[in-house]
Amino acid sequence: MDKNLLNQTIENLRKHGFDARLCRNQDEAKTLIAEYIIPYGSVGMGGSMTLRQLEIAQLARNHRAKVYDHWDPKLNAEEKMDIMRKSLLADLYLASANAISADGKIFNIDGNGNRLAAMMFGPKKVVIVAGYNKIVTDEKAAMERIKNHVCGLNAKRLQKKTPCAESGKCMDCQSQDRICAITSIMERKPGLTDMTVIIIEEELGY
Ligand code: SF4
Image (cartoon, rainbow, N blue to C red; front, side):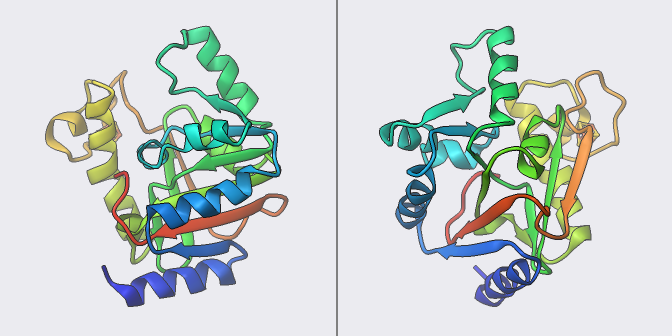
C-alpha cells in the first residue's frame, strides 16, 4: 500500500468537498458506518462486493434500519425494481466506488444507473466505502481499472456473454449483455448531497 497516494487521495477528496475518512481496517470502518446508520430509519444499498464483504446489510438491520437491498436473492424481478426505486429516496445510501483517483475524483460505471442516480441526489446522506485497492493516480488509470479489471470480473460474476467476461479486457462491445452503459465522474461533492467517503486500508471488493 502506497501511504503517500492514500494521504494525497484523502487530502484532495476533502479539497473537493467530500468528507473523506480513513479507516485502518474493516472493524474500524464498520464502527464508523454504524454511526451513520443509527440516526436514520432507512438504508439503500448499491450493488457492491465491498458492502457484502463488510456485511453491511446485517449491520444496518442490527441497528433496526429498514434495508433496501436489491441483491437479496429471494426477490423476484418486480420486487427488485421496487427496492431499487425505494433506494433512491432512502435516508442513507451506501455504495462503493469503482475507482477513486489521488487527485480527488470518484469514478463509477453502471449498466442500469440505479446506483449512480442514488449516489448523486435523493438520499439525505450518501456514504461511499472503498478498500485502498480502488485508489488510482488519475482519470486515465481509473478508466483503465474499470474497463480492464472491474467490468470483466462483474461480467463473469453475472455470467454475461461479453468479451471482458472471457478475456478481462474491454472491447467496447455491442453485446446485448453489455454491463457498462453510464459513466459518472464526481469531480466535486454533488451540491445538495451530504457525502462521506470512507477509505479502508485493506483490499476489499474489486
Ligand atoms: S463495453 Fe463490453 S467488453 Fe467493454 S467493459 Fe463493457 S461489457 Fe465489457
